[in-house]
Image (cartoon, rainbow, N blue to C red; front, side):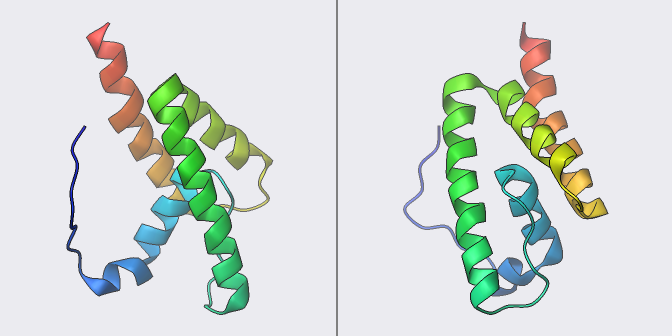
Amino acid sequence: MQEADIVVVASNLFHSSVYLANLEALSGAGTLPTQGGRYFNAKLDEIINGLRKQTETLMTEGPEQVMREIQDKMNGALFYSAETYACVSFYYRMLVIPQQTQV
């Protein structure tokens, strides 16, 4: 595992629809509203808490369980963007497939 004291990114990254879709997908905690404000901030808190849980799951139970949880949440959702589905597919390829080839 790598540790960093400082991570430098462009400030507009956090307003990118792709970045937000990645957060939604990996957290498995729902979707963010399209406009900012108090509701956006409340949903963002939920997303971040979901991301914390997924990180813990990844470290303790592995990538397959993370993907199952993401897909379970997405199956129960009324709406997810195409970007979010693409992110889940990307995470599957990055997290699960390399684990399977190491066996």
